[in-house]
Image (cartoon, rainbow over all chains, first blue to last red):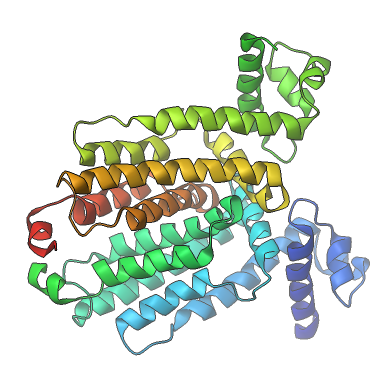
Length: 199
Length: 199
């Protein structure tokens, strides 16, 4: 498969998931969004499941690039922009796509291939937050009593909840983002009070 | 419908969701778990969707009872047990049921009836945490600078993420619980440091 054909299929899968959701998605829906026929898709992939596993790997590559080098000069700025990378959708009309991703996540307990890729998203994000926090503590920008593992796990789990609450209960992404940004300012970033209480 | 028949149907729906998941669930699967025939189920409910909306309302009633009066003498104990109520599954083998619930949550953007019930779960929980935290601040058991809205939103969103991370990436419920318990001890409960820094 050429690079262009692969890019076309991944973009088509993205659109088809956004428009059709996960459960009802067919190879025909994906073909309809691409420049390829359904039989050409079947030539490259064993079926919808095989194609979606490749799509998750494609998303994982892009995700790792997006989180690799958060914008900002200080550790605090970099941690805040990492959070925004996750909370702010890449495109404003991507609610349908986020919903489809939640459907795929709900399949993970029955599906080892999905589970394995989803674990890698989780590990990539947790490990990036942990490094950022450890670096911030090291250089004195974050409170000395901040535990990078605890903070990484809190932030990663919280951000998973942001998506689920948004999809399930319509809770505003902006309000959820504000809460974690404030948590970071109040309890992670070193300030006058925190310098006093730091060990 | 008698109370017993209603209880039977709700228990059967619970088992059928746990065993079959949401997407593939049929009225026959629910009848198979109950003492009623499929046609008796159809007499009481317009179909699977109608039955599941009633099931969500039944869960909501039970959820509101479970969170209404958390165990413990002090505000800290009560907040910790409220968290445990959510994180600790009601039955140890309920992973299949939690996964089915996540599937239902992923349907909410397309389904106003589900959405409305899921919003009520969210509001019930947030409002309970907010009251507990406000009472704790009021009586000096929690730090004076703790904002009940901020804390309630952080805890509610985090706990949504606990479930999603567990289902999607197999992340341990116990480890997730430990992180939020520690957050509460470090940043919500009044201690020596926090008394110094409280306004």
